[in-house]
Amino acid sequence: MDIEKLRKSMKSILSDSRYLHSIGVEEVSYDLALIHGDDTIKASVAGILHDCAKHLTGEELIRECEKNNLRISEIERKLPELLLHAKVGALYAREKYGVADDNILKAIEYHTTGRPDMTKPEKIVFVADYIEPNRTEPIPRMDYIRETAYRDLDKAVVLILDNTIKYLKEMKFLIEPTTLETYDYYVNKQ
Ligand SMILES: [Fe+2]
Ligand SMILES: [Fe+2]
Image: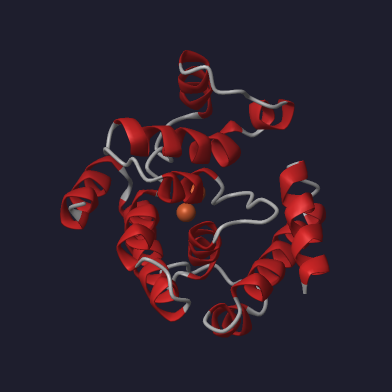
C-alpha cells in the first residue's frame, strides 16, 4: 500500500488541522506497532486513514450508512459526527482506498469507542488517536498516558477511557454503551 498516496488523498479532503492530526496518528501508530511487535505498515495505513470520513456532516454520515445498509444505533443517530465517522471511515477505507485487510478496517471502525477484547492494531490506533503529538488541548495526565502507551497498551486504554468517561459525564454528554463496556473489560483485565 502506498502511504504517500494515502497521505495526499487525506490532505485533499481533510481540513489542515485534521490532516495534521492524521499524520500524527499515523506516526504514533507506526511507533506503537514497532514497540509492541505488530505490523508497522498496517498500523500506518490505519492511522493515516482513521478519520477519512471525518469531513462529512452528520446528515451525510447517516445517509452513507443507510445507503450501505450499515446499522445505526439510537445513540449513533444522536451523535453521528462523533460515532458514525468511524463506521463510514472503515467503509471508505475498503471502497475508496482499496484496503482489504480486516485488521486495518476494524482498527478504523473502533477507533472512537474502542470495544472489549480489541486486537492489537485496534488498540494501537485507539491509543494513537488520543496521544498523537499534534493534539494541543490540555488533557489530564497526558505525559503519563503517553509514557504508559509505549509500555502497556491495555493500561493506556484504561487511562484514556477513564479520562474520556469522566469528561463526558462532566459535560453531561451521552456515553456510547460500548465505551463503558470497553472500560469495564480493560479494568477487569488489569
Ligand atoms: Fe476519529
Ligand atoms: Fe482522530
